Image (cartoon, rainbow over all chains, first blue to last red; front, top):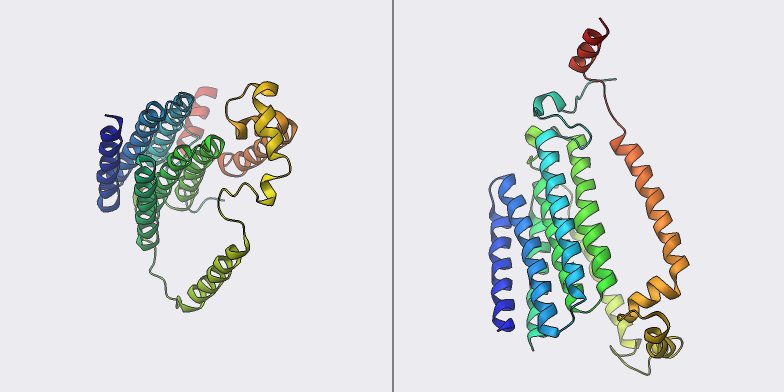
Length: 100
Length: 195
């Protein structure tokens, strides 16, 4: 049963990779990479039960945190162009080119 | 058997991603694919029972370094053309390609002198490894031997590494995150408040 789940997760990773490689817009790639991260977490969790090494579940939890924070940071950069302002309008926060 | 299937599938995903990273011209997409590459290789490390390497790979490769690369992209491009195409290369690839192929061939030739993988008679397995394998569980209580060595036997060494990484993080924050510019409208608001 775990074997079938592992193979299904691997196929899902392949589908997400196809979207990340072909994806026309930035957001397609971000969503696809988030998907790859989530499926890796699932793969580790299923693999922990498959091999009966339950300490791997802690690693899966840490991966979840890293994946979430990474996607939030990426989206903040796309939206604002930087990481240090907390404004909402992107045009105020464009990095200026010709300042001194 | 399923171990081999997972290993081979993840490794072939890594090959696909590496080829795509080489071929792709959009720098933002390359950074996103790098993060996926790090996550897949971290999963591969977990499957190979190297939990500490997997932690490091996920935190540094998928987390910090992709954010740092994106911050660099955001500082050098405006976010409107973040998906901008890199210019096509003009130089000939043959000299670097031949250097890489020759170096790789020499390295593969060098592996013939190494003991085979997992050989218990290899020199690296004869010094301290038997002591750790026998005594790490009663002495530290950590189930993974590599984790026991890194976090307990070499605890001060790891503390020094953490100090180095913390210092490097502060330096990077000072260099990249510290470039706050006073915006014209922010100045105007401050002036209004003073008046």
